[in-house]
Length: 224
Image (cartoon, rainbow, N blue to C red; front, side):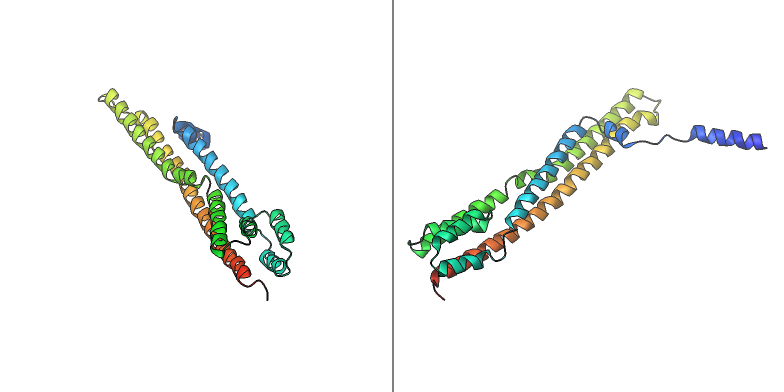
């Protein structure tokens, strides 16, 4: 009886299916996994690079505008310019442009700082359209892999004639399913990452607009 149990266990071990590793799944996805991997790398690079740039633009000292107000009220315009040059932020560059236009009509100053603000926002949005393209394009590439995999499976069925074996379909089905999953794995994080960065940029725009109004108030009320 013991020998029978051992033999049964041995048969079960032999019949146990082999596990499929991550590398095998990637290879099963076919050549479409290459562009998906490239798009994933580009999406990660864009997100990290833009996140760092946007974070730096929002790390301005909260007392920057208060310091500018004090210097302007004291007539220390040159020191205010130095403070702007030493501060790496959209607000600082906007205020610096406004100070450079002192003596001109307030409408001209307002237009000048608005132009700088628009340029700064445009810089923050650099490469974001490409990230949005990846968010929409990666799932489409995965869907293309699904179609190609199904075509491969049906071609194998047609070539097999009446003797259809499930192993003939496995290659095409693997391609279809793996590329679909890979496309979603790339596209979904890219989509959420894009919207997260857009939200951060909107906060920067709101802050820049508020500081623009504050600077114009300083010019309208040069003394307290």
